[in-house]
Length: 280
Image 1 (cartoon, rainbow, N blue to C red):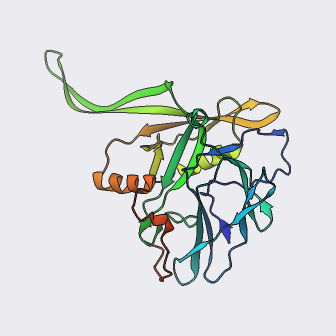
Image 2 (cartoon, rainbow, N blue to C red):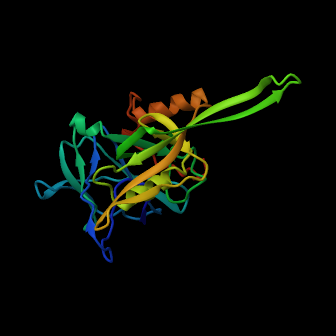
């Protein structure tokens, strides 16, 4: 049984790492939903997993895993962590502690962060994550420090022109584009696994930065700059482009899933364990 690498909580060993660990503590808003997924086989027992309150030095509660059988052999175990009060927490999975994370409703601090939400359009493209469960679209949340700077914009165009005999230019076709540089970790920087997850999540079909859909610009990958040579903390820049040609039906469904405005709160619904094939 493996923890999906798309899950936004990190269990990172520090063995063999030189330098001082990053001082940044991952930050969440109380309204965020932290989706954890375990990929295993049918009939397996998921590990005992608890939310640990760092300030109180005690377990807060035990996470109850939901199970969805993808096919006769494979099963998904998943849970959503939400509604935590202000504080610092860890996830403890079979005695192994995650990196600490903070939950805060302090608006000035949250204004310095961006909520990235991401999903594939189906379950065909990856074997290490599931994005449609019982035909319902699930998005991962990942809140990061940073945003788009005005100085990181660049403009482009795809066009076709015709020049007449008298040197007049006739625009036959034109489509403009705007690429933006997303900066993550400016100031104290972030651990390197923030950049790893950013690079991974940008392989998804649907990626939203604070509710606005973007895509990776061509083959652009995160650029990593050390904030301090003795500190394992980094500033990460990624060029993305806003997606403008959108299917209204798909966008409406995605935004319902992003905002979780379904009256039944679909992530609270019981998942029946019908043997539904993985390929949806």
